Amino acid sequence: MGKRIFSTVLLWLVILATMYFFQATGGIVLIVLVALFTQREFYQMVARMGHVPFSRIGLLLGVAITLAPVLVTEVHPLLTPENLLAVAAVVFAIRIVGERNPENRVESLGWTLFGLIYVPFMLQFLVRILLTDGPHAATGLALALWLIAVSKFCDVGALLSGMAFGKHKMAPVISPKKTWEGAIGGLLTSAALGAVIVYFFGEYFPTALTPLLAAAIALPIAGLGIISDLVESVIKRRANTKDSGATIPGIGGMFDLSDSLILTSPAGFLIFTLLA
Image (cartoon, rainbow, N blue to C red; front, side, top):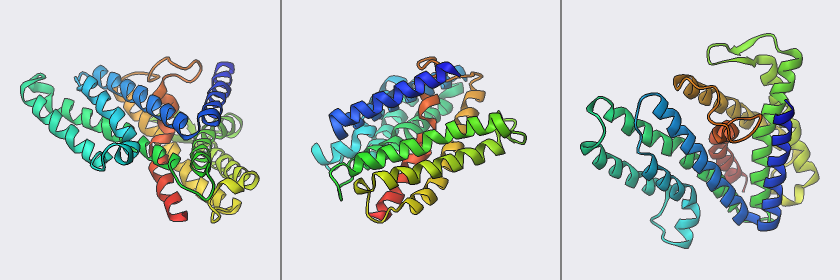
């Protein structure tokens, strides 16, 4: 527990310092790195399943997809995430014809493409949130930090509530330690934190986002974070591994850190777009 707390505090200091000194650019660099290492660990788990994904070209295209919201405005309008995914499908389809064993060609193709969709394509929505315009110059940063805090502190609330009150297993086959009491505690923690952040820093957020609305929005966001964590547990069980890696003491790999952001990033982007 001590290592987990230390790593959590250190990671938040890194995130806050990077975004404070380097603003949206620093945030985008962090997201690209998180997506890259998460996708790498995903492909490593796929390899443990007995498949052979196109890891190198997949990671290269993953970086491009994560950066696509920037590339489409700064480089060329055709460099959208969807177009880059289409290019990836073409590239992998050509390679699969002459490479990999016949027994696992379909699986290797499917897992490689799923890795691109599930990690960089989903996390590029967090880049799009960072690039949000107004009403304040730092609105994009505020929204991104709000989403990360609401998503991640659901884990903290769920852990503490589960340890204190957990009795009823939520998904005993997928993740035996998770309880319904822990999930409720995590949801309430996220709702309270979402409201508090907007209450004290409301000038940075869209005017439509009141503390009460922030609390209401935090509930489904946190719920998706829990589902994201369960999906990663499904993948880890299929790969017969406890943690996705050993990058972060007390937490595990990068995938163990970023899992809750994968489903919450697109959901948050859609909600914030409606509020604009």
